[in-house]
Amino acid sequence: MFSKLLEQIKVTELADQILEKYKRVETDESYTTQSGSVNKPIATLADEYGGRAQVGVDDNCFVLYLLQEDGAYKRTAYIFPEAHEVLKDLPDPRKAQLEKGLELQKEDESIKEEIGKKPRKFECQECGRIFTEDEFVISSGPEVIISCPNDCIIGTVYVPDICDVKEIKEGRNNGSL
Image (cartoon, rainbow, N blue to C red; front, side, top):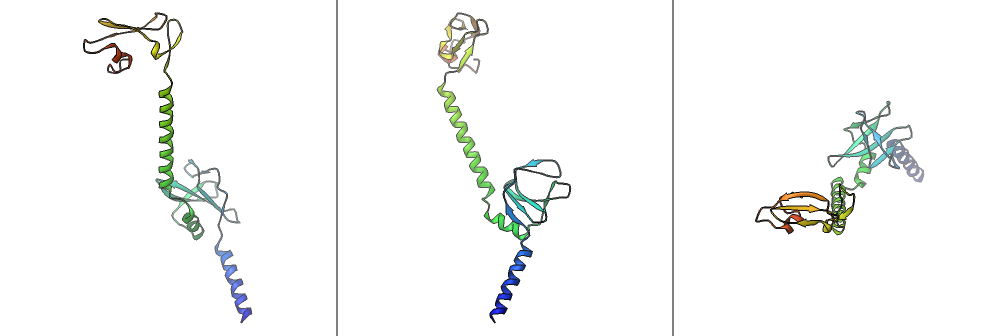
């Protein structure tokens, strides 16, 4: 009885070895499809005979690619059991994309905040002096003359009676400055 049980275990182990051709390996840096596009996989599987499969993401869905004889990868509609096991362990691609988007948004807000802290700098085209927005010299009248601290004229803007110089300096005059 014990020998039959031992024999059954050996048969089961042998069946597992035969059926589990592909194993998850270290994820490749990239793979090239038959159309020539280069993609970054999220998982790679390989078998002992040189076969390789890449798991990619397209439109927030997992896509399985198999290595072809020409060295390119071709999309397959067949999900073999080893790939199924790998897919079950992968994070939801929609969540990863959302997290990446939120990180980029946070980074973008941080950059905008940092830019807002620094005064904008300008270079006078006439004298070459670098100065900040706060150093503009503005003289008002029917026209506003904007000049650099060295009195070089940078521009002239007609100011309607309802607009004041402060609005122009702050760039609220229909984006003229």
